[in-house]
Image 1 (tube, rainbow, N blue to C red):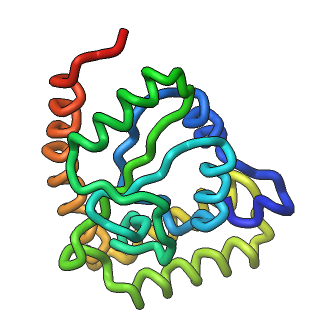
Image 2 (image 1 turned 60 degrees about the horizontal axis):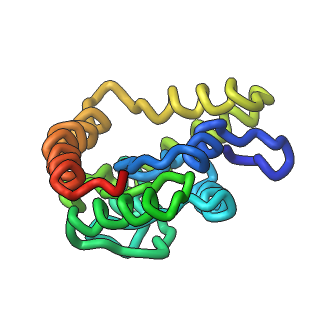
Image 3 (image 1 turned 45 degrees about the vertical axis):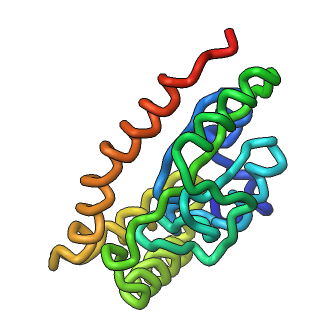
Length: 178
């Protein structure tokens, strides 16, 4: 979370990823979080982070969070092979696969940045910390009632089931080491 260096407010999900050998396909870290610090913490915990057909870490509503990914994969079979190799080696941690929303489907950068800045300022003004702060900023990022946020959400929701399904098929077709 933002300000974790001062508050020690780090999501328990990061620790769960460090001890659960699964593949997590996501649209990136939500911008309400400290993206560079989150990626650094994942690295420190031994969680592999890869970009699916991208060299930039996905930003949830944006195709680029502004941060690079350490590795890029271009094929779902590579993801399955990475996972199987990790399981065979007894590695306890997850692989996080950042699969960004398409550039034509992403939220306008200026709108995103204004909403985020507004939410962060409101949380600061209300002297909110921890989970209350994250919730308040997330509420702001739900956006205005004009539908632009929902329009940015729709392509991500519609494409993820088919992409995730292809990944599961790739995983299921490989021989298991156990």
